[in-house]
Image (cartoon, rainbow, N blue to C red):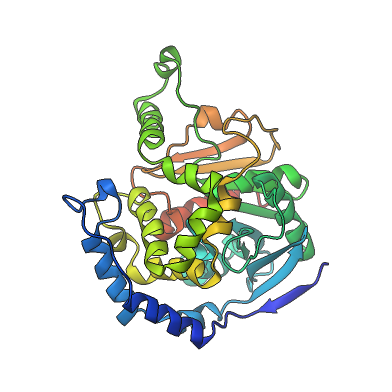
Length: 383
């Protein structure tokens, strides 16, 4: 099965009417003492966002905007894969494969399509142009349902290599963050003869934790802070991974049945992982974008499958991987925790940029900084 089929988003009106009913009839929990973020998403904040979703958010407008981009589906290794494929008008454009993470979607990259494919119109040079391919991870969005188990980052990397082959690309680059930051180096391992460069935001590897005191002492203050934040994450935030990687089906019943539950589950992470943390996520990214991302999960009922694919990986954290030898660049924003020396153990790092602003959702929070770094890196490997 190598057929590539044009795809258009066309959500039935009955589905949108059902969402309206559920939002209108939603039963919110009582506020816990203080109604703060330490115990989860505050009722006062979420109820206001739910009202906006119900009364002002316009999915049909968004759907029309998304359908302006060429979209397709194809079957790879038994799995339906949805992707956007936007070619540049520049003859020498380099194909670039962009991979999102959880709880994101292809929506993360939509606003970068124009600057990537038409750099001259967005303050760049024609020589910076890319043909853009943005797949939805297996089990996410319109790449559903999950057809089989075992969709590790390694297997996804092989699938992405096959996708680029079907599109006829002999040389291409890869970029991603979160799960995409792990998948992108795997594409290079699977297709090292054709991948000219790997670019990730956040770092291609989480530093080991805990570290011996003597090793910790050799790190810079910035790196020590990142290790400390890994520790804080393991103590304060790891619960969602424990649930999603062990009981994704049990979790899915609540999230697929309740749009408010799905919204709260995702908004908790957008608040924790955007920067600065004290600023509300809708003030950093914007309500419509946040809700569109949530809509991709809600409309496709993919809460369980995205959890299953995203975190039920076969290998444990820290498993050693082979180095593809492909030039690799990383930009690490203020929220993230990548450390170069550990990334270099299994990646050929040729560019490393630490930034004192921005969070985990780089393409949504700091698109200009991300774009500039992507352009700068791929200039060195296009030749």
